[in-house]
Amino acid sequence: MIAFFRRISVIVRKEFLAVLKDPKSRAILVVPAIVQSLLFGYAATYDLTHVPYAVHDASRSAASAELLAKLDASGTFQRAVTFETQEQLREAIDRQRALLAISIPLDFERRLYAGDAAPLQVVLDGRNSNTAGSAAAYLGAVVADFNRQWREKHGGAAPPLRIESRAWYNPNLETRWYLMPGMIAALSMLQTLLLTALSVAREREQGTFDQLLVTPLTPLDIMIGKALPPIMIGLLQSTLILLVTNLWFGVPMAGSLLSLYAALTLFTVASVGIGLSISAVSLNMQQAMLYTFVMVMPMMLLSGLTTPVRNMPQVLQIVTMVNPLRFAIDMVQRIYLEGASLWTLWPNMVPLLLIALITLPLAAWLFRHRLA
Image (cartoon, rainbow, N blue to C red; front, side, top):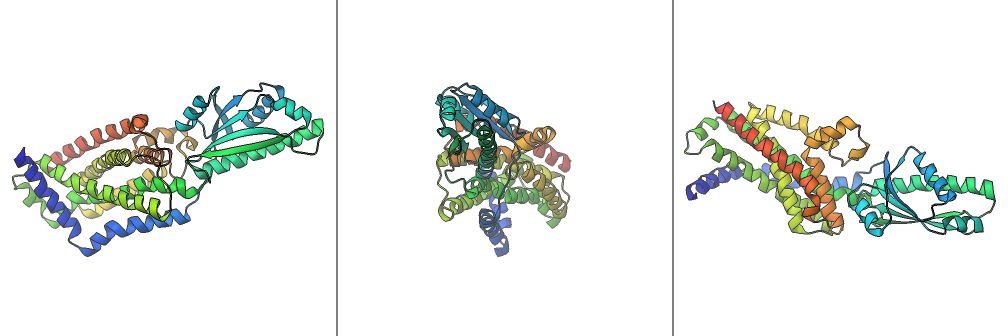
């Protein structure tokens, strides 16, 4: 066992020296992560298409039924949950079954007929601030149309219905609060995937791969030694982006650092498995870079960072199940903004674990196949 760890430490030291010996390479590992996080934090904005909502109708009156019918007929709102208790409301929002929750009070219809303003209580999921803000605006348009029709039927000058909204996890619905936690996973993945993909291809191109094979190192030693440095570098870059998010942009963290780094480590291992598979099939660095960039753009687009996964066509939603970035972004956002614990994130952790268990043995098999 001691000899095994000694062999691994030798290859790990060699990989770090290959990456860090050039000052330009050292700068590339640090500067892009900081610059990109600042650019995304200041420049990016998003929009909406599909809004699942939860409702609690204590009134159960003709007026409340009319309002909910207008929502369901809008084409934007889809009723996902009907809840009776505050705990059911919290569960619907926490598990992202609903983007917003509407509570209609018991005296809703009586207030309307009395000419009083009837409050409509709305809870928004502020983890995706842009989507929540757009959903609130869409809801406001539906309520305005309901008010207009009610005045036409029953008269009155004051708007009969008034919205009282509150956003959870992002009180001011700032896009930056939603975007920057996702960047902790997304930006670190770019460098991790590229570094891993270039590791074996660089050896082949520089002619040192054959020298590596005549050492006492086994193929497994070489694979582990080449996997560990990108994992460490990926976690270091995630830490840099975390510091920018928390200290520079002032986005408060609600969850545990231990849970965050456990999720990031699992995600980074899955990403390294993909990168090593790319490296094993690449004959040179140019091919490795080409394969990496071909994969990175679809992974970013299908991650749910720019477009909510639930708004994608059903076929693409199935395709996202093999994208580790989709699950990582959801985990990081929930841990960072919501304070979710690891045991509540098992629907995201299991797919990441499966991706790692498939890609790492695949990379080892491809590596041995190339040796043969």
